[in-house]
Image (cartoon, rainbow, N blue to C red; front, side, top):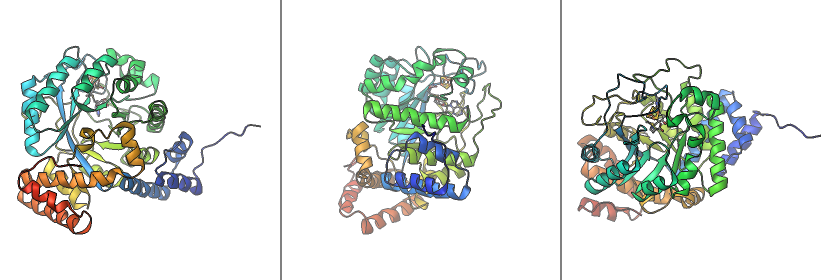
Length: 438
Ligand code: SAM
Ligand code: SF4
């Protein structure tokens, strides 16, 4: 007789799963389900601690920083939860010209950012690849921004090819929810109402040459247990098909938005569950970067810095032209309002290394190659040195006096204990050389 495998949260089963994650092995769906069903708070504390160790093994103690750059809030969709939805008649709409996008990017580069995430609503003109190419070329040509990632609407393979050739690093698109009935309720009209077109988007992006893709579900639309398991299952399918899965998983959690139609949700994700989701992703797919945005409060983000987050935004505005003049409709309310300097200072005070590095994308350490290096734990060797070099540049060019002292102490400690040979490179940076990386 065939035995039915049941969910098992006995401590020995959970500890076996944690041991597998510590070996940096991808968890299967049965193991993921066991973790999701776990209720024992003490065992969850072990899970959090394991997530911290796994993160440290793969990525070292670095946290990479970036900012989103919203280029248009015009949108033909009606996602009920979003301030940019077409039905929000009170929205103040704006799409940046190339010159305006360059001005915003210059302002961010002036604060020390080297990587930006472009974000757009879906619009026949302002999410078209022609428009995006012009914006991307303009920013690369006229600013010190070294890598642009993008979160924009799904497109065809041909358009993705053009987007990739314009020099974008990661293409990000969130399924929002995998639960079809909920998806239909949340996306009543516009091209985004087509569930399958969205579900297939990363296949098209990868086939067009994007080796780094970012995935996520919007936490709070449906039961997080179901949706996070579905997201992991989707990642497994990509790994099986292409040899690599998502480069990053994001954890957007539903926030209030001016003009949103979704006033309440029965699936609100508590802070404790949110922390569990980050740990779950970290353990299920150990080599994947986890992105935590400023949707979350500073308190929550500070906790996540040490249990699994590897990339965080800082000082974000969620409206186009928001950095220069904060007056158009935001996509949602920002929780962590600290600026880049404050977030860098906080990360450093926790003994972690704030990084502004962009080397992997430019050295073509992407897709399967990135996964391979991460699995061999070789990634953190490059990344550690690159992170320190990027921080040294930040100290020279942007840090205020107090932060400069704090970060210099940190770098001196690294010279003394961990990173022989880097002192020479720091000297070169002091003499004005920039963008040194391995
Ligand atoms: N318009 C494109 C799309 O929907 O895919 C790309 C950019 S959209 C502005 C980026 C993401 O923001 C969405 O995929 C969604 O998950 C998230 N988002 C939208 N409204 C939100 C809200 N009220 N709170 C938190 N995240 C939200
Ligand atoms: Fe438009 Fe994206 Fe907002 Fe939906 S989530 S309304 S597609 S900007």
